[in-house]
Image (tube, rainbow, N blue to C red; front, side):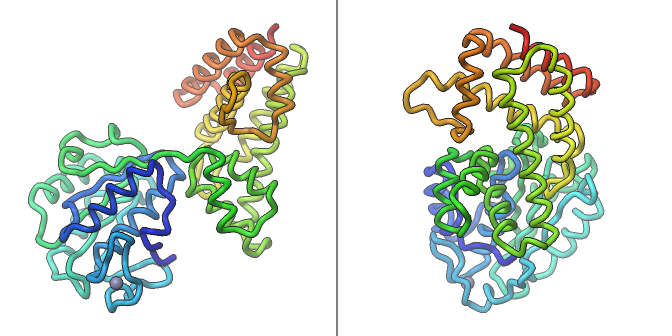
Length: 356
Ligand SMILES: [Zn+2]
């Protein structure tokens, strides 16, 4: 896909947009920029949009012009002669890739006034590659700029961090995601609401889902999005029973929870089995947070279309019990991301949740 003009991106918080507009108004981009935020926020989209803006000699604070000779060089696949993209292959960025890029950068820009390198998931630079990159950042070739992306800044070497301007992307509210989807996609309201609830405020993920659903329903990506959404629906069905199931049903619910998480493995974000379980537990954390927020006026709920099941949970267990359970879920998530046995963790957790 061609890069989106900066003005079309959805950015949180609002001051982030203002700061980036100011950056675009200056004559030169920062030497190196690091974009951080959880998966699904649209870090890659932002990186491409900023690179496109800085490559364009006619740019404005709204982004690249899309019509000048430099902008016309963008291919449909989102490639440009003055841009290099490095990403993990398959799980690391290696030194050869960094060296090869350095050689590429020793040539003058092809059409634009400068050249850009985007390093996606820069925390996956292996140590040798990270050192090679650091050397390049310390003595950058002229007209050569970097944009790095990573889920969190503390995953990078301090020495690399200290050379980067850091841009932090935030999540939107469920309502914010819903409103944005509504302006861009022609899908039923209930579907948009579900996508917004499942997106965890990650607008990039919500937009990708909506795109896939709106396009040809037989396409492979569209099918994989549908099965991912089905899996999330099954998860919520498991959660909805926590308000009425007896303790005898704990192991059954733990089993159904793990099955629903299995269906979240792979997908566009290539989730590992542990990452899929951890995601399932994140939704459960959100479910308990929602049940605790019910008591507050104007609380913004993630799963507002499941009000009845949330109230049932809140009626069955006192707030203090649900606080304690929230703690147990958070600990279970930590254990899953470590090396704990998934079945044992899930069973232990659901027994804890149903104990009255
Ligand atoms: Zn242009």
